[in-house]
Image (tube, rainbow, N blue to C red; front, side):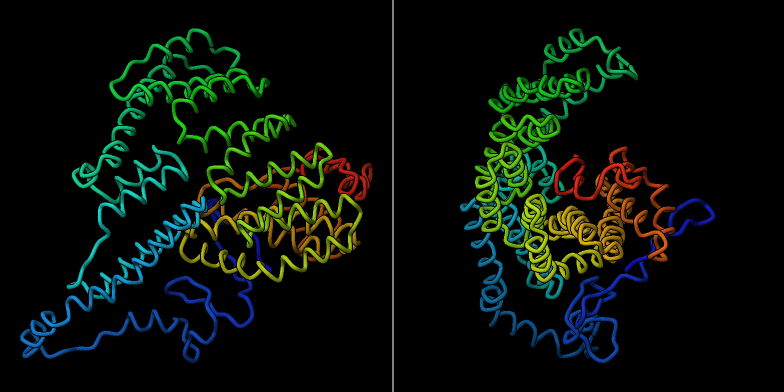
Length: 495
């Protein structure tokens, strides 16, 4: 499906993916970077009709245009604005309805689609510029704060609006103040950190540094000052006591009392730490709170389902997955966990049927997102979620292929999908999603496929530059752990 990145003479990997398949019946537009149906292209053109239309400019005689234009503007301005703004207004209403239903990420995407529509219309007709009103911006950044954090919303706002514009509304002015408080505290935290340059957490005088953080004073709303100080105390505690996963929890809980809008960062931190420690009783309330705030946060469904499943509550786990599918019907996470539970039950036929269904629904979407990522160096948030979840899903699909004795298909899935998708995402965005699980599964499949697939040796060479498989995986390769023991009986903990 794809080739590994080549090493240039200067040591930099060249970004090549000449073997990437585009879904049948679709073509790749080299201008907008989108994969569209062939019906959107004329002949052998590499540009879609929409992009071609934007490239065409009709030369007009300059004389006689202005009088006619003035009359046209006078007669049609109201009609034009009404026609042009109607789709935007509908999109904003859709966003507000989604937000009320706690589908926060879908709501944000609807808002951003409305803004993109405004930008596109203004670019196409610059004499009829219109912009979102301050109430729209206020609602959007309130939603942004709900979805991520107030500090993130403040940063996003100041990229779009200047301080004078933001100061026109109380809620936007509050976001500016929040950013000022956080930045002031962060500057003092940085100074404290520089005063204690240690390489080993054990060398950090914890109580002394904790006292210095508690003594920080900055101007601003005490709720935000105290809340952010608690978060920095939690960071220090996690750093100094990495073996005590829950040592920072009291600081997180106190921070949440001050800063309820910071629920995302706090609950995610607690849930991930507790999941790693297999303390499922701590995971469940954190995951539930995330879903009470945002039905679109798919990771929380996964943590909740896995916690129930690990406790032997399979019915509760499956009920959570059904809630996930209702909220996000295109989520590969749903199929990943359904396949996992079917495999653990020894129901390989059922797992295969689930894989076929997932591939039918979302394989084209993931490939289209991959092409967009290569062409535009970024992807929309919702598409990005599907893309990243498809990486984890592919690992279980590869495991199923191994259990069915189809090493070639397992290798193709692990290397050309899971590994390459993660590799290029890392390469382009700088965000590390190359998990140990991806390395383990790809290495296992490459080793089992050596001599059966010409790309297996190439894959092993590339993998050696990225990372090594863990001890459990090596035992599977060496035959000390069977595939059934690994994946059906669950003797490996990386998948």
